Structures are given as structure tokens and as C-alpha cells.
Image (cartoon, rainbow, N blue to C red; front, side, top):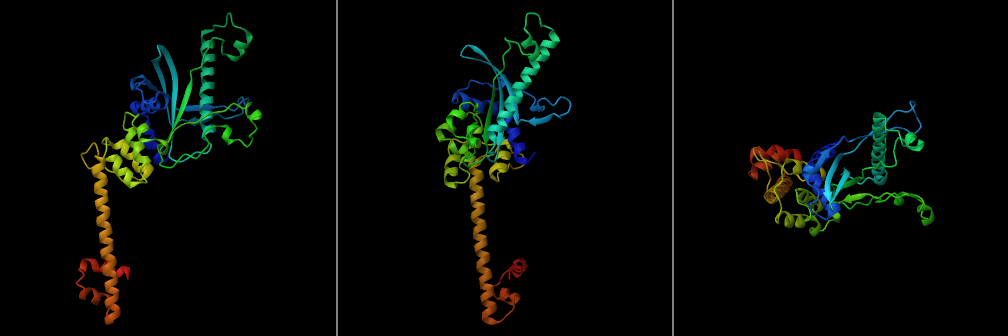
Length: 316
């Protein structure tokens, strides 16, 4: 697992951040899903080659984050399995990747139902089809929803549906092929109004990523209603958009607007220093050429400090 994968996973595993992402995507920012209603699940999905029996080796697939949700919604109990896949680059096979994860989870649910029936030996009153499949008429699946969070300022230009990945365009044929849709949060597509629907630091992280290539807009954003950032958020921004933010020793939070101002000042000072060096270098060359003297003699004439002479010699 790469560093980007690690920091985004650690960040999105937090229940409040995870809930915020789904509250935005499903409920438009309403605080329906509460962090305490979420329970972390095993991220391993086991794929067994169909009909392989003992001849095939099971293959393990790992989701980024997977949680179960038990909540009341519209006066009814809602049981959901929610997954998040973090992407720092576009995955042009994303519909297949997510479809496989979801299908494996549904297959696991069927297997667990069959195992439960075998253990209970509750076969009486059930027909042969139920017995053979292990899944009874009254058994129900828990819906699985997978959400992709794109940690990049670039637009997502990958396919959003399974049908988009197919060469066949005949609607009559495609109507016989079940489609699969990618659910996506991409910063570049979020308006400021939509960003305000997030209620955790996910708002600041996505906003910073969105404007990371536009310093003017980034300045305007962080000088607005922008929360201080902690280590997890800083790690995500440093790895995903090379933000170069850092906490000083003993600090727990970073005031981002001040950090950016300091970075701009440092950049300006560095530019001034580079300009000064270039000017001195040109002066040294001019003196050497005009008076036919060595570099050391030219630097003496120009009164360049000995502490800098070695640097200029290496540049000549």
C-alpha cells in the first residue's frame, strides 16, 4: 500500500468523516447518519472461482473502508453496508472494481444465510430449491453502497457506469446487460455551496484539493470560514497535492491561512535571493572578462563574502 493510500484510508476510517461523506452524497448534507451508528467491518472480500471446487485458489480483495449502519430513517429501521474507495488517480475500470466488491459482499451474505440455516437445521417447511441454494424465500439481503472519494484537483474523466466501458452501443442489447453506476465525490465538481454541505474537516480537505492549482482561489478559500487542520488532514493534503504543510513541535492544529502566508513570504525571499545570486554571477563574469582576472580576484573586487565565494566558483 502506497503512502497516499495509507493516509487517505486512515482519514476516511474515522466515523465522523465517513458519516459526513455519506450524509452529503445520500442526504444532501442532512445529518441523518450519526458516527456512533457506524461499526467497522472486515475489509476483506473473498473471491472463489466459480465451480473450481478445491482446484482453484481463493483470491482476497481488500476494500479501503467498510462499515455497517443501523439507523432509523423515515420511521423505518435501515440496515446498510457502506464502503468507501479512496482514489488519488482516476481508475478507468472503477465500475468493474466496485461491482466486484459489491457482488462479493452479496455472495458472502448468501453464504452466511446458508451457514446459519445449516447450523439451525431449520429445513422443515422449505422446498428443495431453498435447501439447495441455502437461501430461503424470506431471506433478505442488506444493501451495499460503495462511494468513491477522489483526492485530486483534476476532473474525473473515467467511466461512471458499466455500460460506458462497453463497445456495444445498441440500446436493445445494452438493455439486457445490467448496468452499474459509480457513486463519486470529486472536488473539482463541487461548488462552494456544495462544499458547505460537509460538516467536518472533509469540507476543508476537499476545498483545499479543489483549489490547490489556483493560488488566488486557494487564498480566498482559506481566508474564509476555514477550520484549522490536524495531522490526519495535513498528511492527506501533503501526499495528494504536495501542500507542504507542517505542524510545529507541540502544535496540534495548523492555522492554514497563516501557513500559506508564511510559505508565500518564504517563496518571495527565495526568489529575491536567486535574483541576487544571478546578478552577482553576471557581475563576476563581466569583471573577469573586462580586466582579465581570475574569478577569485573578481569576487575580491566586488567584495563578495568568502562564505559565498565557493558557491559562485561552482557555478562558473
